[in-house]
Length: 556
Image (cartoon, rainbow, N blue to C red; front, side, top):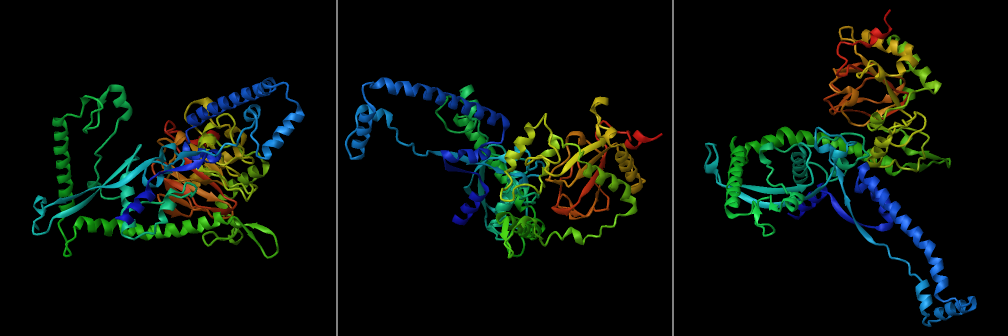
């Protein structure tokens, strides 16, 4: 049971005591909501204003306290104090002891993006609090309640767990319990928990979902609403208010309903009967079909995470020649040197690649929009190697506030695209005023890119829009904004690079001069790390542009 409790603690958020002097370093963990940070800045400004006002008044107060005291007397007074003599009252008022650092409770929230199929790491919704997992009860049900023909078995025992938090994502609880069962059964190392909660790790890590028929939402607390309405809204025995769900008859009906739900769950577990070893077949089927296949993949994810983490923890390494080299740029087994890649460009892609390289060399690559910045990982090589990138929480906050000043491809901050860049061309929904400026700035590139789609997939309906990316590594995401309701996307990679595969729901695809189709609106996708020069083109048709063809913009 102690081991079970330790595993439960790994999956929950904790409250830690931090020195007040260190609060500035942990503010990003307290909240990532820009509105909260705005209120905090206003509060800090008010405190600083009060301190400045106090400082202006202090010199006058000190000179008026005892104007007859000379500098010599003050010096003598200080000398007496150093010998152990008691200072006078004026000295007591002037002498201030240093304040001790106060301890402040800080809630260490976690990102539960790997415990849901809907939300991503860069979304504020995934930055959640899960207070507690605990053993609530042990339930026993006789086999006679089962519809199975095998009624000679002993009573079935269930372990009832209770999980509490502020707000649960879709599928979060089933996946949390799935990981907990994997830890209990020893099919995965406890370090895997660090992997799924590391917000800087730029990959999605699948988690197993426990059987749905064992889950029930049993309690909801309405603390604020109870204070406003003066009623007990969560069924329980309470003398706080006289009205609400606290009378005996209501509690009895709720108890009866819970018993009925538990009997239904018992029947669902037993509907497939038992195997020869006396274990429930539904339990064995889940272990065989879900848990064990997932565990083998999870072990591979954990090994990749360990290699990535080792690279980050030792960013610099002293070489034999005495020079410092960035270890993150050294060769890893996953990515081979880009110089070993065949630089030959297929004739089909030659024209588009030449236009992309000219645009890159010109320094006129368009800025990246704020929304697209949120799902991009900075790749600037000029950044200080000793400085670790800031957390995703603060990066998202900066990018979401970057409304008027879009990031440049050559000057960046974390979360703003870095040395990479991304812009759209073609036809966009919203009318004439919403059309991309790049259409008129780079007409030859746009025309060649739309012609390339027709050559790659002649049977495909020509798209209205293209996203053009340069050295862009994307975090796991689903397309939104202009991509809402889009058609099936077509993507291809160009350039001399290694790595950079496209991950679609965990499946790896090599897209270097190999075009593939996928549903970017519904399927989560991201970019694997890469080395070298990497461009990518993504053709799609957003909602509102159906029937419009970007290639017609340049037809005679």
